[in-house]
Amino acid sequence: MRRGDRLFQIVQLLRTHKCITARQMSDRLEVSERTIYRDMQDLSLSSVPIISETGRGYSIDPAYSLPPITFNENELESLLLGARMVQAWSDRHMAAEATRVIEKIECILPENLKQSLQSQEILVPAFHIFSDVAEVMPGIRRAIKRQEKVLLHYQRADGEKSERVVWPLGLFFWGKVWTMVAWCENRNDFRQFRLDRIECYEAQDSQFDLEDEQTLNYFLSKVCDEQKN
Image 1 (cartoon, rainbow, N blue to C red):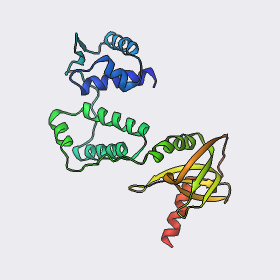
Image 2 (cartoon, rainbow, N blue to C red):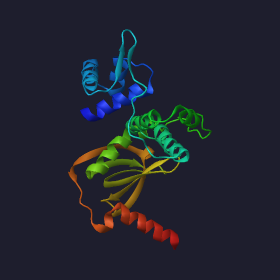
Image 3 (cartoon, helix red, strand yellow):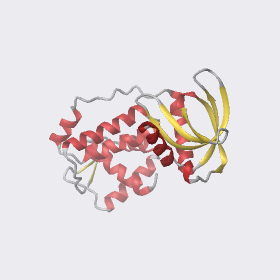
Image 4 (cartoon, one colour):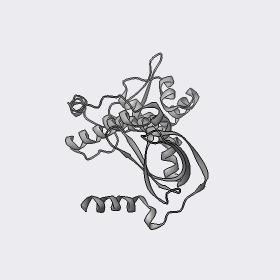
């Protein structure tokens, strides 16, 4: 995490907790306590009204505010619901990012609106995805961003196993099952793979360059055309 992002996250933690210790912040941000102490000093020198209480930790002046965000209550409810779904049904890295999104939203809300949204009747039980999917997903997301080829060890629904080199293009969530759309070198065509059937994968050293008819957008337009017909 970049230093600027970390300082912003510290301010969010201070705004969402009445009092928080350096140890708690270091655990949340995965840095040393010494780094937190240095960051707190830098924030104080930058005129952020931090309050230090011996034996209790740190807090921030409630009057300290950030620029307003222009969402109505229904829009905020939608944002929070989406973030909670990511918390419950993605890997731990995305879940952590979703948690930070929720904290950023809640820290800028007036108390009455915060209580209203926290008591909403639309809930997302945190069952989380299966551990094998949670282990696979971060690497697949990384390969998609870097356009890296991946060697898949895959088991089909009928139990047949295969190895194939694919070009990961995108991930889709179907309410419970995650699938990956990829260009398959073996088939020279698009294929979809369920993440819970990927036994293991190996990132390759080579990257892929897509032709126009190998992109995710082309795949989506192709699927739409097939559904219309």
